[in-house]
Length: 314
Image (cartoon, rainbow, N blue to C red):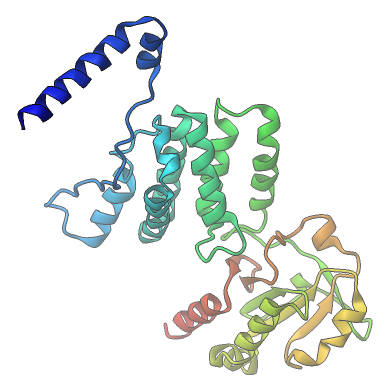
C-alpha cells in the first residue's frame, strides 16, 4: 500500500511539473473538459404535480435542464443523446401542440451555444421528425426546428437555403388550413378537381402504383371497415392520384384500386412541378372535411382509420 501511495505521489508531482513547463503548460490549459457523460438526467418533477397533463407539461419544458449544450461530448454519445432525443419527441405528443412547438423552438435555440452541437441536434430533428422513413415524423414538431435554424446566428445564409425551402413547403396544406386545389384526369379522359368533391370527408391518396408501400396502403384502406362503411354511405370520397408522367405504369395497376374510389392522374404534373403537395413520402395521405380543410396530413392508413372511427362513434 505504501509503495502505491508513493508512486501516485510521484506521478502527481511529474504531472504538475509538466503543466508548469513551456509547451506542456499550453496543452494543460487548453485541454478539453473531461468526458463525464454517462447517462441522461431527467428533471425532477415536483411532487405536487400529480395529474398526467401537469407532469407532461413540466417535463417538456424542463427536459434538457441538466444538459450543457456547449459541451461537445454529447455528440460522441449517441446511445445517450439520441435516445434522449427520441424519448423527448415522444413526450411532445402528450402536451398541446402549441406547448410542444414552443418547447421545441426553445430547445433548438439553446443549442446555439456551439455549432457542432447545433448541427448534431438539428440532424437528429431531420432524422426523427422529417425523414419519410421515420415512424415518428411530425411536420408540426419540425417546423419550430426550421424556424430556429432560420434565425440562428451560427448559420451562414447559404446554410439557410434548405431549411427555408422546407419551411415554405411545410406551410402548404397544414392541418387546419384549406388544401390546395388541383385537377385530375381519369382513364376515360374525363376530368375533375379536388374541390368538386362534396362528401363529408375526402381522403386524398397520392401514390405511385407498384411501389411496395403503396400496395400496403391500398390493401390497408381496402380492408378498413370504417372506410368501406363511409364509402357505402356516400360520406367519404377516396381520391387516388398518380402525380408522375409514366402513364403506362399507372394503367397497368388500375385493377388494384376499388371501383368505389376515384382513380386519376395529374395530367399537367402540377402537384409535383408546382410543389402543391410535399411528396417526400410516397404514398401520402391527407384527410379533408367537406370544406377541404386538412384534418390529417401525411398520415398513415391506421391513423386515418382511427380518426374516422373516433368521429363516427361520437
